[in-house]
Image (cartoon, rainbow, N blue to C red; front, side):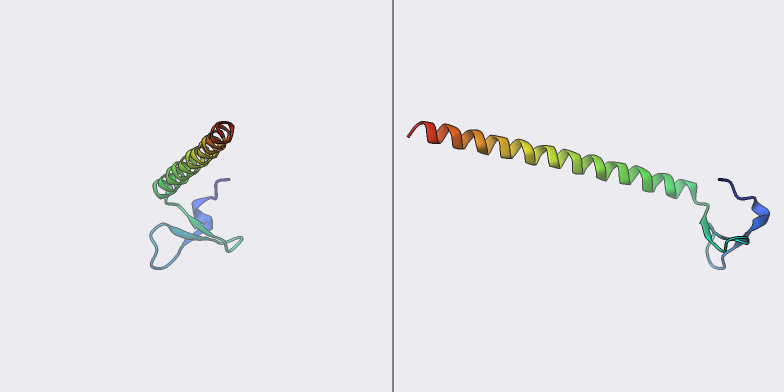
Length: 73
């Protein structure tokens, strides 16, 4: 949803922040900052998924090692 520029009032002391006259909401117009945030968020999510996969793999290896050691006694 695009807000017309004439409906935005600059927030004093902040270059990329504007107040919507109609709703009073603060709008951040820093698109590059948002893009960087989303990229970092995606990277953290990917790292979290990789870590979860490694944890599952380690649990499986531990389980298999327990089976091997119990079978050799």
